[in-house]
Length: 476
Image 1 (cartoon, rainbow, N blue to C red):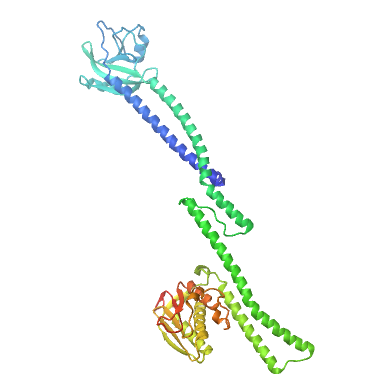
Image 2 (image 1 turned 60 degrees about the vertical axis):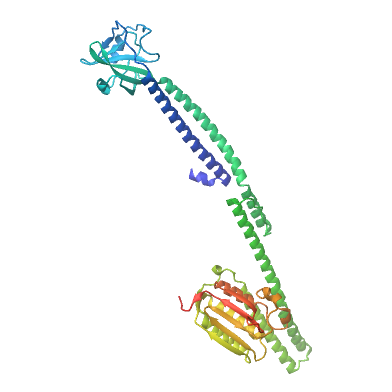
């Protein structure tokens, strides 16, 4: 059964569960209805028997008394009943003691089976009676009423019985009717469940079509309409968000490839030109002057270094943006990284003054990535600092700031400083690939921090880069 259920489609399982739930509800309701009706019918029969007047024996009544109801019924002559004896639909007999005997009227056609505990009726007071379930000697069920009376000079028990076979026949008819209604209700529930499943899963069909369309055409960015705020709507919204994110990711990937190709074209073209010039000079037998050749080789070396840095930057940016997919994070000493970065920056800017204030701070991140980020920030400050300028580097309470005194960044360009391959129009002539600050932003995000770049807070010239990393003054 479980294997069959799992092999069905979602629409089939939803239909089955709907029909099964309705079937259980109908079955329980039908059973409850049947038991309630049964209890009411039997209670009504007992109430009618208890409230009915007891039959009185006429004058000259000469009952037939025997040891058992069966023998009394077998011996009676089957005479017709007088009109003033008994009640309609009820049968009467007497039970006497000392010696025990069962006495039937001469007109009796049925005898009531006597139980051993019926003798408790001899202790009843006038007006009291006992109502119990019983049966006739032929096995047909009945409700029996027992009251204390006198049979001549002796006390006797008057037993009046009302057959319950009509009640059982009514209950059987009711059971058939309820069964038919339940079966019809289950069939209708299955049809309704099918319609509900079809209507409820229509957004899922649309989602499936959209996914199949994307898988077939690879056209990410497709969305489906969202109606309401239920679970299906949430699923549709999540799919639309995922599809949009995939489209943006592909767009960024395409833009990265195009920008990388554009940036690689310039040094490669220059290298090819220089190499062609050297080859042509050798082929024509007209060697270049030593000074010119030395200059060409120097340019080629610089271009190769630029290509190496650019490829390294591209490899750094090719890593996923999310920390979970990136390198393993460890506890790193940010103050030590800042110290090493400052020493390297001094070599690249020998005429600059570095004012350094560094306090111990430990953060979780990739040591190589964070060191690359700090070096890129200092390289950026070195690049734009004037000759003999000052670069201020401070690390206090987990906040690293790098301040230069260069021309600064125009306000309308601040929103682009961390974009890949973006370079300010005023600095296009300076060396660089436009990837340094992008690497800074990615490395800081991987460590759970944030980075900003803006004008100096004191209103003076230059730019201020701020990096905030969670952590503490002691390693955890």
